[in-house]
Length: 164
Image 1: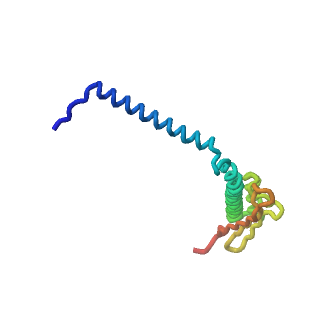
Image 2 (image 1 turned 135 degrees about the vertical axis):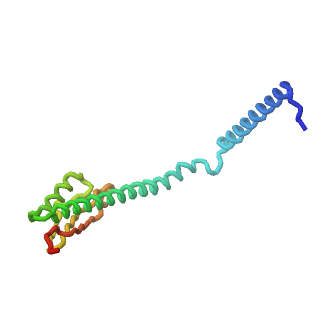
């Protein structure tokens, strides 16, 4: 069964009722909000107090996460320097100290993510079949007085002639 088509007059009247009803809702909401603000309720001024309590926790978490990220970058820098040293030292006929020089060059080019590495310097030891390089230092400090020790070691086999 088909519904009768509404006339233009009925549609206009329905739209006017809808506009009036929504305008009334807005007025009622404004009245309630205005009464709440002027009544001086018990939770007046609670937002600044909540913010003052929560903000230090948020800042500590923010700086702690940044410090953790800096520590991970320092570890990655130390490991890459150690691997670079191993790659230089394991080559057939490499001169002694080639790994340490390459690791130092890498650390100078990498920036200050790893600090204090130059006091002990990268160390590479070469055995008959294996090269081991170790890089030590401390992570860059984002939070004053907080830095973490970093030590990374890389291993590799020495290239050599073998009887086959």
